[in-house]
Image 1 (cartoon, rainbow, N blue to C red):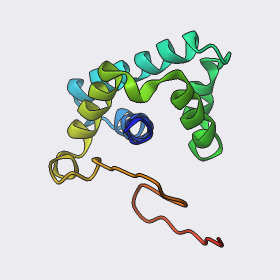
Image 2: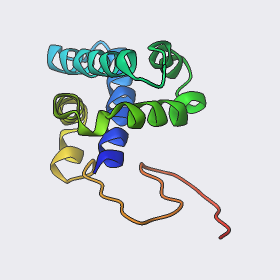
Image 3: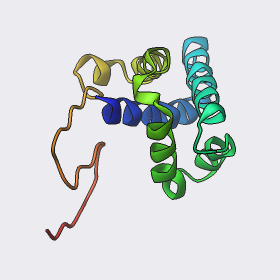
Image 4: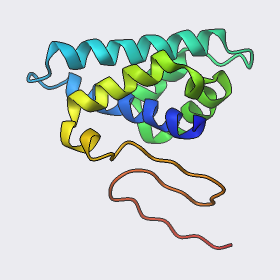
Length: 128
């Protein structure tokens, strides 16, 4: 569950950032997104591995280039076990994409798998 929860948090960061730049984003979206950012900063700043909070800003500037680093840092920091952070991420996604949240789009469970991608429109070539 922890890996799926970390992916949920990263998805919420992306969705909140996209929604936040639109004039139509409501206070609920902005507040939930701020809670996710705050929770991520809190976890990264206390991580024993020495992860820097600047990783969050690097991800915001170039998500594709820093996604794997952010996922690894959040996993190491225990983000998947942080109920408050996961709840804030769910609130962002519920505000940004209510039909997707209701349909269980962000309810992903992966176990004992290789080469897994989560999201829409992905492509992958694997050789095992």
